Length: 143
Image (cartoon, rainbow, N blue to C red; front, side, top):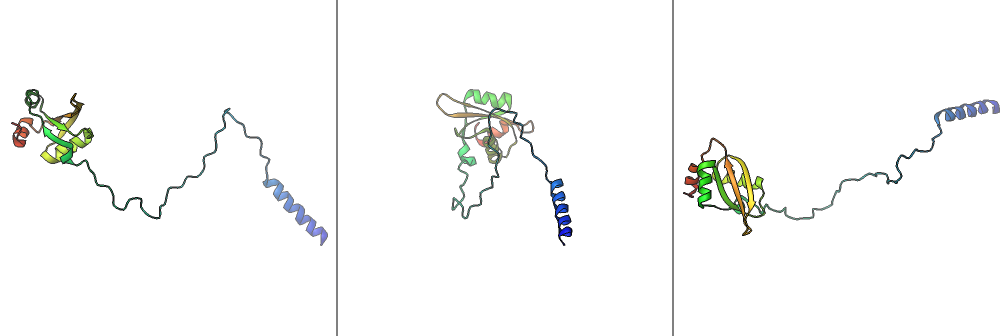
């Protein structure tokens, strides 16, 4: 019995010896040590931080204040197929484009903006070729 168990023991030891391998020293290529990246799980809150979701305060009626009716604005309407608006200071070009599109039912090609010295934002709204700025201006009531 001792002899059989010894052979089993040596057999098990040989199996283990074959499966284990010696791990060498890790070669470091940088002088600075960076901590290893660990698992970062997404948050799973038990309740929401806000009872009611915030509403979008920058709606189309806040974005566009009023159309500009100066001589230079009229020249833009006639020559460059462009409408000129005074808009909210915090409105960006995408918001201006969407507001003009939804309020006046026109397609906008591009929007250029500038902030005037009196701290108001002016938007030059260039219309697509299939819309005439003069007709739109008449419909809005600028002219």
